[in-house]
Amino acid sequence: MLLEFSAQSKIENVNFRKEKHGEDEVLAVDVKVSCELPVSMLHDFCIDQPEMTFSEFFYRDDGSLREFCLGKVDLTAEIFNHGVSFQTLSEMVEPIDLDDVKINKFSFVLLPYRKVSMTFRVQKSLDDMNNEAEEQTISKLAEMIKRGVKFTVQKPRQAELFDPETSATEDDATLNHDEVEMFAVAYAAAVQLFEKTKSTDESLYMTELGIDERMVDAIFDEMRETGIIETEGGE
View (spheres, rainbow, N blue to C red):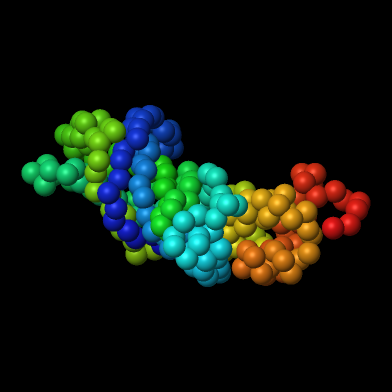
């Protein structure tokens, strides 16, 4: 999975910490970023699902959200080896450019007019910087907290998507790796649809959520495990 976008954003928090590199401890930084993006951006996290799953199911024709819209949704993706840039609104100030970063802790909330409010964390080890560059980076990032910035994510030549909790194996016949992120979104919508209709008609969920039979089966299994759907009883 590759991400590439540029958006007006806000740095919500900056945390400096020590991390282990072999026997050594090096300085690293975590930057929490928030921004608004078009809802089509979610398609990058759900490779096997069409964009219409979001734009047509969750939105009316006028762009307003439907009654059963989602709350906050967390995504488990971790993106490696990307480059990022933080540019203040003043072009007189040099941007902060970081390469080989990890981006994770993605979450989003759907907004009206096919927008999405997304937050995520950028992690970077500073061990490849000299002392002067390290000090400048620390100082600039600290000054940007709670300020508007232009945030840019650049594709690497190669990047990895790692989902340690839900990585599929060749023998896994339930959901493939690319469908995992879609599951979190579809599951939340399915719970709301069930609470509204009390129906376990698979065709209803396939039609309303735009998902296939395997996804519906996986969602129903999870809903039964959590007690949302009773294991004994009809629709």
